[in-house]
Image (cartoon, rainbow, N blue to C red; front, side, top):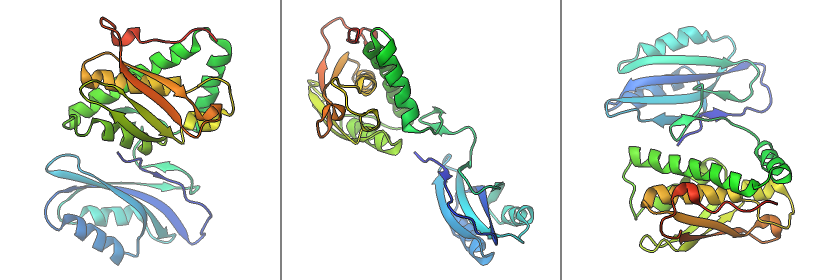
Length: 268
């Protein structure tokens, strides 16, 4: 997963920030030719990523710093004339601030947004303070998100007992939600998930109750969709309660329980 954005601090009056999205045929030497050409044009690449669109085509997205006097449209045309290059798109970040190569942003198969953690935590706090059964609502919301994630990963890669926990951990780190340590038996589905640096607990502040119900639900949804069994996940200790990390326990739900019937907590 790539989040194709960058924040440029400061302001160099002699340069302009330009992004390019270069679509090319994936043949030997194609990418090297593009990079070498940009170097010859004195284009400084600040950050970039590759997206293997399919077996034949690739996409090279870069943020660059270019001298103000350079005609960006002319430069784009020259890149497009390179052998194996199929298409070039570009944009100029007038204020040298956050910018996206693609709009709308896509994360695990659906539209996504970049937002501050306090914004999401304020929503959670408002629910906890004003809504009956807030914990249940948050758990159910997380459950749906986890189910979608497992379905998406299964559609694009082999998902099996050797990697299903690692993929979930990589997702959490990639989107900035936390660092996971997962111990889950793929036969009994008993275990626990340790969350270090949970964005919810870190931002929420001190409270006397665990407040990461959304994450518990997400874990339950992901594991339920992967295993085909109803999995229960509950937060038993939370960093917001003074613990060093957040801990969620994993267990099989009682027979006959489906995903929508996961325990959802009582009124606060």
